[in-house]
Length: 131
Image (cartoon, rainbow, N blue to C red; front, side, top):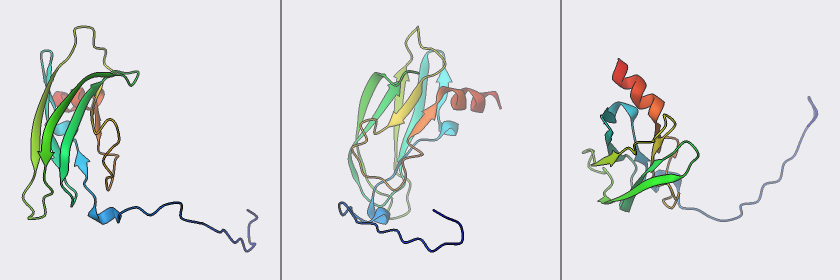
């Protein structure tokens, strides 16, 4: 693309998706995750506008491999403005390094508004507990 030149870009939609504002949005927050000994606890949220039939949370190692996966069941959308939450708990393996993460929807099966809030890294949790 040349500067100060008219450029025409033609874009074709490959497939139609449902509108982004009508999707679910699973969310994890480091401030709600706690480590006690070898246990990590936290809360999964649905902050979108669509129900989720089965919320899956995974404990993932530094290489991206799933250590453990849990199904939390359904989580309705907060269309009445009341928070929707599901608590979770994992036991960290004895050999777990500091690079693990907790991930919502690790298989990326749920169309969401924003997926950048689907993971919490161990460093974020540890840093939050020091404050």
